Image (cartoon, rainbow over all chains, first blue to last red; front, side, top):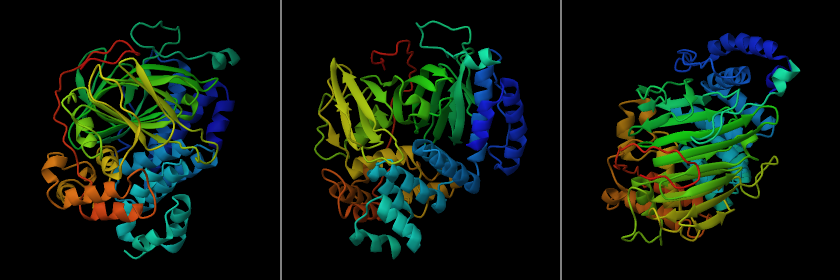
Length: 157
Length: 332
């Protein structure tokens, strides 16, 4: 988010330049699916502010395309008190990689922190097959308010 | 430059609204695409296969196929996750980057949708229309099912009467997911107002839902969505790792690693209810009653193990619906 803050404090020209400079770097760390192409349907009628915002959004989408960078983006969003944004980022990653337990557990905890305990507990249950290590289990139990009697079912699987 | 930054962006408002000199057609971007999703361009009317990072324009018509999902992220960072066999249009989007305020209007004609307000959208006037209801949104996470999907999920809700007045074309099921009153980091609680047939029901608690059986019918009284009914939404709007997926999903995942979450769409909840899946759904529902308490996670685990979180069928009409207005319910 520091990058974002800096960009917003620059002039529009610098803003666009920074965004354009960021994108190649983001592409290097992105997965194949996201790296296919920058959108070719950019509308010349869009205001410069819109085009600049689209570049920022594009960078976020690219950053969401690998497990590590999606987690990093979500962590930054949480640092900036944007739990909903973090949930969107993690959800986005899980759409294309449903097998990622590490992302799913963060998604579950984020949902619980948004006070959607039902959804968070469902996500926890989905990864229970793999078992949870003790620190993760402790976080899950705390944030999702899972009864102690239910925890063995999660940890022993 | 200051003038440049201070200019507001007014992005096209629905059909009857005015245009600003800074009007833009682009409202956001496809941020995740799974399987077969088509976007019908407003200008040309031609349907194209949706691609990740493709820009989304005002009044594009999004259509998803079976076992397919699309996440759209709007400029204000609101997100729309569209489930399988759905049809959706963004028909209003106003965004002011200076004040970070925005207003979003969306129409879901059929299928399922999960909407998360972006940070800047939380103070704005956001709405979602279905054929039977209008949902006013105040900073929230909300999920909807329309048509066959609403009926399928509704059948998983204990006590919900699915009588003869239920229309599989227009029935709408709406649930508030959050943020709840105990949300952290200053996230404000979400509120939705569901209006149908001149009656408005306000929901303030996450997990509470309303069912509108048909166009012209009033919304039901709010009820706590059971784990079984939640599982119906979950199958359509979220993914499940193959180790926990029902057998039908696991077989599909062998075809494509990315298809396992919402596959098995040929099985209805009714047709699978006689096997372990039915028992699982019942177990999940029984785990909740009026909410989630002790034993809920064990109940969910049991449901997953039994393959109870069955995928639902959506076989509704594909007839397109033209939506011009924001406020009244749409016609199927």
